[in-house]
Length: 395
Image 1 (cartoon, rainbow, N blue to C red):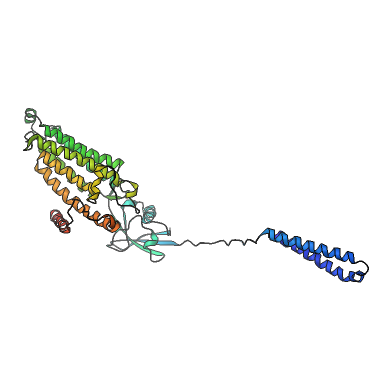
Image 2 (image 1 turned 180 degrees about the horizontal axis):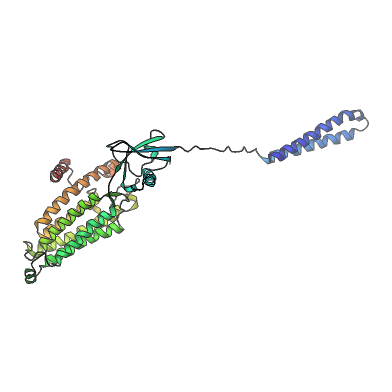
């Protein structure tokens, strides 16, 4: 378009220049033929008018857009051993948007003996491990970044941990319930019939852990991260060991039923099932996309009456969980179940208090007069006492 306008303008100017040169020679003949001069001037005005209209109709000239050359910054990451400070490798060509997980992937390519879940990276020795979702740009002070590597040992996924924790108690309890040989005396087992509460306790125990397994697979959004094998062994030892102790007493041929008979068993069994249903519905609400992630909102009660516990506490799933174990303790009236319930109450109270503090920072307006786990109990000294008891038990 620009070339066409330029050529047209040059032709018109050249033509007008030639004609004005010819006017000088023709002025002598102006007296003789004035009409010829007038026709020439009219032609020139027509050409100039046509050129101006053509330029106006073409619109403003568009300037060519300048090509922007964005320079991508790359980082060079030096990875040192956290104990010896010796250099292990250098990961280069790391972009600004790369995450720590991407760095671990490249580190695994350079050192195949350490897969990403086993790699722990720190900005300084003895500092906290960097999370996988952190970007390199957020932790980099210059184009050269130094990170310290720690071998986290054998790792397992959190889904594996939960499935192992809950599958073991389910199978172990059934082995004691069936009274397989080498656990109880066969003669005594054949002579004594099981009390109805034994069958009911087995049903409730199975319902509890089957719910756990199904929620782990289909409800809970388990983190894609990993944890050490030691935590898996520790958790399995706790749950499996207590289940063996509990099942041994409840399914023993000499087990005696509760003191208040069927009324005690029936009331506690109904309360157990109510707490199990409440726990399930609360977990379904917590698994909703609006209650997870960075843009999460505080869970709100809905038409389901089991979710109304959110009006009183910030962690109703722990409230229902402790309610289930208290009901199971009253229903079976055994010491091992009571000790397990006490330990679980302490642990869940600490978890609830930790989550309650996070909720207070994020959703302060929604936390008015709410307690962490037990309704109407807001004293912080109770949580400090529970923390002290936990430290004493671990030591």
